[in-house]
Image (cartoon, rainbow, N blue to C red; front, side, top):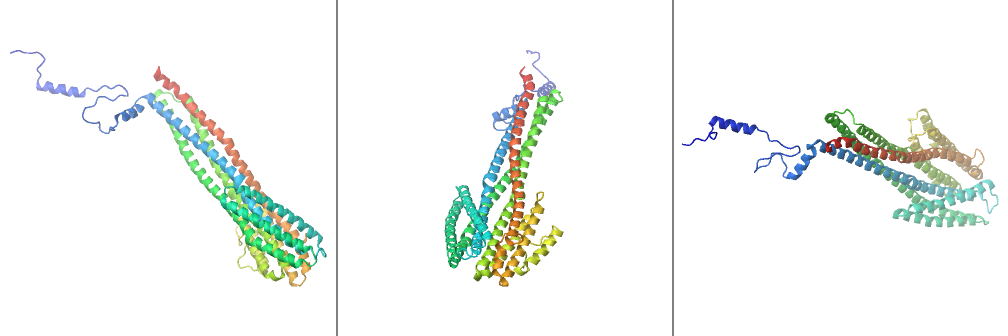
Length: 518
């Protein structure tokens, strides 16, 4: 029998050897997985080994982690830069649309409506003051009415040209402007014929019929069409405002989220370096974090400031401009109804009601009749003056008083209502003179520009109305300038800070990455 040394082991030795073999660790090179048993997958391992290996390798080494954090930082910088650049350019486009298109279109339509009413009122005043073929003419009222008529006619022509240019590309608006232009030509023809007939002896009846036809055309076509333009253009402005406001809000939220993520990643990189490289602060990354914070703060201020400027331009200022422009047009229409009341004896009841309807649109009092309107106006206005929250009236003046925002605006608006009350008292004087059979005195009081007469008080009312309108126009223009300035000043600063943050991030991590290439 042959005996071989070392080949035979006891059962206890075999068990000990197997146990030690199981305890021997598998030595892996850093970043590489160790050998795996064949025939089965490691639990939780994806079915795509190459992808899993790449993902594992991305975090397996310190250089890989630093590169991944750098890539995340630069990606967030790029995302925030793109967002703020897009937002800034969109805000600039909004200001261009608001200041150069939407607001001018709305005010031009309101100016057209006002000029049409003024033109018709002055036509009535010419016929009232002209006498019979010049005999008995009231020279001062007649000359002023002729001058105001020409001014209003030129204004209508100018506003129609402006609106035609603004309507290009909008088929509905183009059609409305074309119709207005055609109807205005017919209106001028009728008024021209009326004024020509009025220069002939005995031509007053024919002149009145031509003027009546012109007024019907005005009331049934020209004025409704001009109001349609006002509402359409104002609605377009409102749609632009709503879309821009929603967009700025969404962009601000996105900027806050991306900015906070960027700051969080930069802080995480700083923490990682401090922990693994035993350095308290990395100067480059510290400067990058500061630049990112500056960009985050300035960009957020740009978006929030643009939103606030837009709200101020639209809600605080332009809403009042629209209400006051409507009030001015209604005032001229009421003034025309007053002149027509004197001109057409057979329609006095209708024009008296029309005057009351216009008054209710300006300063609405529930249940008021013409004979009770002034008393109720005085009562409700004194209640308001005692308590500015006690507004017992409606209409365009209420709309303005509900939107008082700027220094001096309330006092100017109150002066406007008080001048309006004076004009209303003059109207009752005119009707009282007519009721007494003193029609020539009523006409003289109505169209005279002498101090204390109706047209003088009407002019004072319009001057007060213009003053409060100008306050709002001025602040609208100031909001537009400030909004444009906010974008033009802060967008470059934000972009510069983000570029600096990206450069400093790369520079700050380069020495640490270089240590692994040495």
